[in-house]
Length: 164
Image 1 (tube, rainbow, N blue to C red):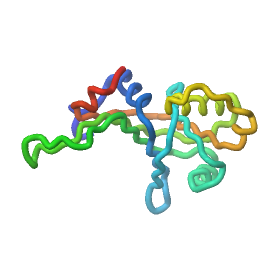
Image 2: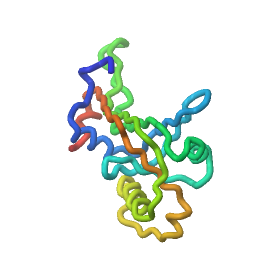
Image 3: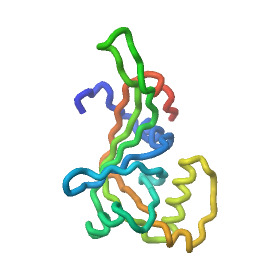
């Protein structure tokens, strides 16, 4: 990271950004270019949980990789899009964000799939919802287990809005 002064070192702040974010941009390694997919998610037990149809490009990429795929993810906790400053050289964006790299795989047990789906609903502030076994079996629940997590912020109203 070039701007070390903007690095987030506190794990509580990183966790707060993750729990307050609305979506993640998942980056999968493509043949010619990365495949980027915005997804809703749930942060639970230090993992990102996402859901998907059982067909499609990301599922095919995961299957082609033998069930485990190295991925990247970016979450933006808060961003104030524009701060004009006092002139053209002072225009900036205030933000707080998290970047992680890890392994993506499909959840294989109904118990973890249920916990992952509940984490997604909790993240979306939708409360507790029941999931039938049939519904869980018809949905691919994906888990990103991060190997590295880093955060960056440009202090301002965005960073101040992140609550531990």
